[in-house]
Length: 304
Ligand code: AMP
Ligand code: ZN
Image 1 (cartoon, helix red, strand yellow):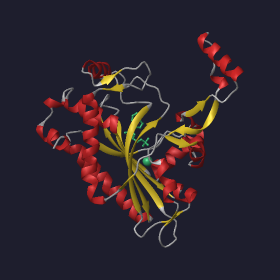
Image 2: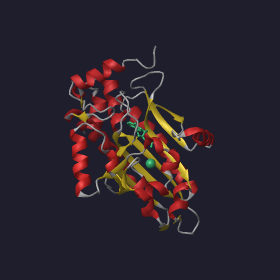
Image 3: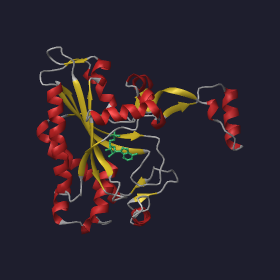
């Protein structure tokens, strides 16, 4: 079967017809109807209930990041093609009139804007790492966040969005503790998603590093088994969609932000992220457009 066309039209049309998503005219940026939101929120709440014994610290950040932080984490070195920069107008009266005239005349006006101090957050965990700076408490720390993230990858696939929500857990501590935590969550994540009737599997993965040098980095990432994904068929059986990712950054962030364990050794970090829109779409794909018709064992977990 053709990977590109497997049910993609029928599925996207069905999502729109059932009021689950609302087209906006922007590729990869649709509105969400109340049923879609209810599923997404209920899944996020289920994750919270399952993770409750871990007592993660819950933090909330705005969906923008300091430009300096984007630079510091190396985002412009690794993923410039995905970045979203916020620009605004900082000019004179004359320039403002010029901008307005150009916009009305259908001419380009963006060159009259200047970059602000902020960029759109590309991963929900980025604002967390600076909060770990310094000496960690014994046993390290665990934080959870949920946020909108932006990635410039316009697409007509309903699973490939420019703006979507990520529920993340971020662990920092001794390397062996961090890896143990990552491995345990991989099991836990698979069990959680299988329990919701999703035909998932896990695999090693890599990030879409930019360019030729990027391909080497991606190969190294796979070789060192630094990234795992939980995959589920949503729009293609042959190319299942990553609905959850597990990243072991080793000392990438801790070296940049001076994060040390209680014994002063260099800490490691790892994060895991559920792509909430993708999980929602995987559930709809598996069980149908109307959650009222979903199996009781799935409904009872999402809406206890
Ligand atoms: P990553 O930080 O790239 O590992 O992404 C974390 C999770 O976000 C992935 O496992 C996906 O579930 C989700 N995700 C990544 N890119 C997109 C996208 N373009 N649209 C929707 N969800 C995405
Ligand atoms: Zn992360």
